[in-house]
Every structure is written in C-alpha cells, then in structure tokens.
Image (cartoon, rainbow, N blue to C red; front, top):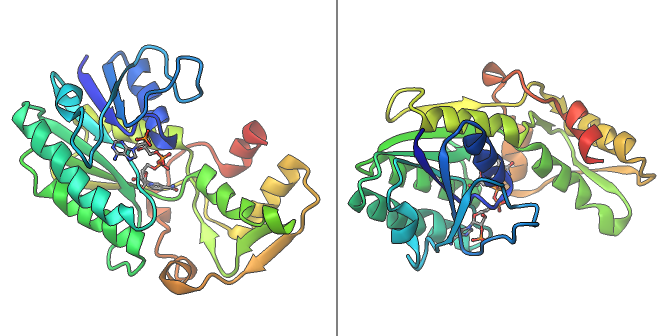
Amino acid sequence: MSRVLVVGGTGLAGRAVTAEAVARGHQVVVAARRTPDDDAPAYVDGAAYVTADLVTGDGLEEAVDGADVLIDASNAGGRRASYVFAHGSRNLLHTAARYGVGRAVLLSIAGIDGARYPYYRSKLVQESVYLESPLEVRIVRATQFHDFVTSVFERGRRFGTLTAPSGTRFQPIAVADVARVLVDAAEGAGEPGSTRTVGGPQVESARALARQWKDATGTRRPILSVRLTGPLGSAWRAGRHLAPEYAVQGTAYSAWVIGEA
Ligand SMILES: NC(=O)c1ccc[n+]([C@@H]2O[C@H](COP(=O)([O-])OP(=O)(O)OC[C@H]3O[C@@H](n4cnc5c(N)ncnc54)[C@H](OP(=O)(O)O)[C@@H]3O)[C@@H](O)[C@H]2O)c1
C-alpha cells in the first residue's frame, strides 16, 4: 500500500482515479480547491480530502506531506489553462520534491504533438514541466472521454439538436479504464520518463456515436453535422487524436451510454 495524492481528484477523471486507488487498498488523499460534502457525487468513501490550490500554492504542503506518489488529474479551461498547467504544475512538483514525493503521474491527451490548438499546446508545456522535474515521472495520454464526446453532442441542446462534428471520428474511452492505467503507472508500471497512450476500444464516426446517444436517451432532437473551424476542428478531422494501436479492452461507448442515459 502506498500513500497516493490525487490532484484534481474531485473532477471527472480524478474521481475515477480516486475510486480505483482506494479499491486497490492505497491510502488516498485528494486535493482540489473545494472539498466535496460526503453525500456529493465527487466524494469517494475511504479517501481523505484536503483543499489546495496549484496556482497560489495554498494547501500544497499539507497535500503532498507523506505522499509516496502523486497523480495529477487537474484541469483548467480557457485562457487560464496555459498558466495553470505551467505555473501550477511547477508549484506542485517543486513542493512535492521538497517533501520527498518519489513519483508523479500526469494525465494528458493523446495525439497532441505538434498541436496548434492552444489548450493542447498548454498540455504539451505541462508534460515538459513534468519531464523536467526531479521526480520519477510517467505520463498517460488518453483519447477523449465518453463524457466529453457526449458533451460535444449536447452543445446542440439549446438549438434543439445534437451536434456532431462533420468528417470527425472519435475513439472515446471510459474514465474508469483510464484510471486503471494511471494507478498502474502510480504503482510503477512502465519505464520512468515514459509516455503511455491509451485509447477507447473502438473508433467510430461522431455521427454514429451521436446516434447511439440519441437512441439511448430517446431524444427526438435531430443530429446536426457541424464543421468545426480552427485548429481543433482540423486536428480532429485529420484524426490526430486517435490511437487505434493503443485501444484498451474497456467499456465501449455503446455500453457506457446505457448506464448514463
Ligand atoms: N476530457 C477529455 O476527454 C480528456 C481526455 C484526455 C485527457 N484529459 C485530461 O484529463 C484531465 C482531467 O480532466 P477532467 O475533465 O477530469 O477535469 P475536471 O472534471 O474539470 O476536474 C478538474 C479537477 O481539477 C481541480 N482543479 C482545478 N483547478 C485547480 C487548482 N488551481 N488547484 C487545485 N485543483 C484544481 C478541480 O477541482 P476545483 O475546481 O475544486 O479546484 C477538479 O478536481 C485534464 O488535464 C485533461 O486535459 C481529458
């Protein structure tokens, strides 16, 4: 058993990581800026919760104190992303090194090498901050989560549609499947300094996936094909985010939607 710190452990991926690490018998501490009530969906029974802010550094010392390994599943959106991923990761790793944390695992995104999309570029910077740190680092790059792909479809809700990016395929993965790989890495699987990519079990068109969501929810909203502009749209149409060679035997989108709809 190790003492595992899950940074961002109240988030979508972080909750799954926390649940997986607790289930494997690790002593788990979750750090985020807000701690959940014990009846909140983000609360995992058996984990301890501390407040910490990657950017200001408040609470980081308490969070890392006594940890053997940290798993970073934090996130930041919009213009703050580059600052949080660079400055926040430096803060975290610097503090972790001072407190003798031996190992760090970062959750990143598949296919971001050479990306022009600003969020992906900030994840690349975050990866380099990790790889340059004195800790023993492993990076796990995942394809898009089932929940994320669904949120893309649901962007059409206010127009009475489901939106499916045209000419785009996805290889969505369940966060529980990503969590297993992250906790494996936290336990020492893979070489120090290595990057492992994991993808969902199937590559399917956005439209086919949207159809599965539509059927599972029973919504009458039509599926509207939209052409995404900008660097994200072109990266997705080129399939740079796909990793069929790293498909895991996990929960397919078709099975996941049944539980979520
Ligand atoms: N979405 C996808 O399909 C996908 C695919 C592959 C990889 N990823 C990566 O997976 C990671 C997690 O994504 P997610 O969607 O699970 O994130 P999320 O649900 O938005 O959760 C983010 C977590 O980070 C915490 N956090 C945010 N700012 C913080 C700060 N300054 N200090 C401390 N904690 C902070 C949040 O809690 P508080 O707000 O309370 O602080 C929360 O616990 C991201 O790095 C993302 O790039 C995502």
